[in-house]
Length: 110
Image (cartoon, rainbow, N blue to C red):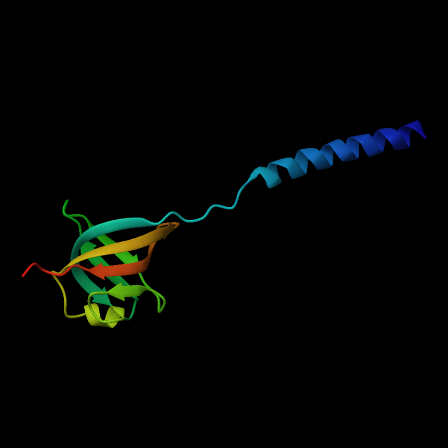
């Protein structure tokens, strides 16, 4: 009887040790990031756009049918003829991939 009690206590302690760290991990919500630069290219086959930042770095973003586009029609297809135009891209990181959620085309001052 005493052995059964000891086994139950050890099993309960092991369960608590295993479950508490799992419960402590909060699911992380991807943080939205923005990048600003000039549109370099749109690759509709790969569903990517590339921008050049003011520091001359090129960044590639993946987009989807749900990516919101403002200032150049309602879709990424409207960006295809706007190389050199200033854009602001709102995105999240998934591993090494930059996932664009919104692309804002900046109007040139009149």
